[in-house]
Amino acid sequence: MNPAGWILMSIGIGGMTTLLGWCIYKVMATPGSTEHLHSPLDIDTGDHDPEGTEPSSGGDR
Image 1 (cartoon, rainbow, N blue to C red):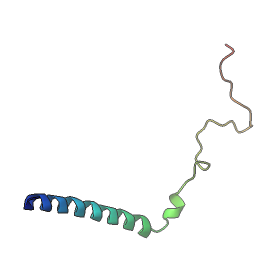
Image 2 (cartoon, rainbow, N blue to C red; image 1 turned 30 degrees about the horizontal axis):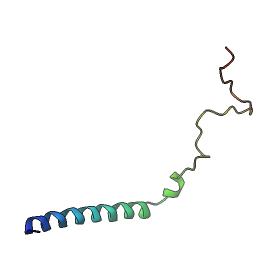
Image 3 (cartoon, one colour; image 1 turned 180 degrees about the vertical axis):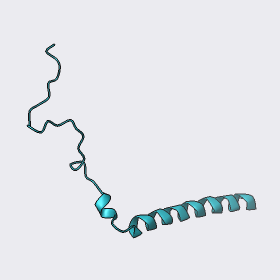
Image 4 (cartoon, rainbow, N blue to C red; image 1 turned 90 degrees about the vertical axis):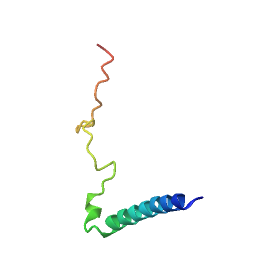
């Protein structure tokens, strides 16, 4: 490989490695980030009736 290829490859790999390191740092160093995590059971999708009755399927029109 010629020198231009080595330089371009080094810039690409170095840039992606730097971006990965920065992202990992931001995730680990952000205080209070655990309060922003939600599981699927915490998210209200609005498709559940609070009384526990099943919504009608609309098939008997």
